[in-house]
Image (cartoon, rainbow, N blue to C red; front, top):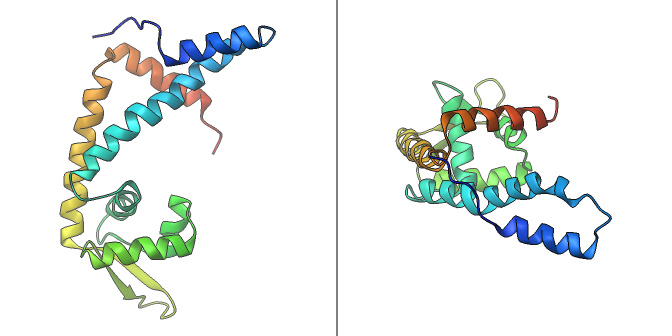
Length: 166
């Protein structure tokens, strides 16, 4: 079901800018402002609530999901996790420490390089991340249910066009 949007917060912001800076084509901002608004006030809270029901915060879920996506035996190095999740090694170490204390990951010296560690998803970590992912998919499905299939496909195409090159 598609709802025709009445005036929203972005329309009000743009009207203010049009009044204050009428010479600027501020309508170009509308799509990006709505995208940011939906991410901050729609997608973000929906995702955080879904994974929060499993005792996770977004960053913790990201680490567990990275390990889960790596396939059995669900093992990666802290450096690989840091690179993929674009965070500092120190930040990753802190995050891994918390996940290890919660019993969701295990840390072991690498058999190949005893100076490095391997981080492995524990059985409990696999159970938790799988349940959180199922909840996340269902929650985002509910959110996307506000759009028709055609609108969803059009949005996906439009966002792909804006993606930076790899």
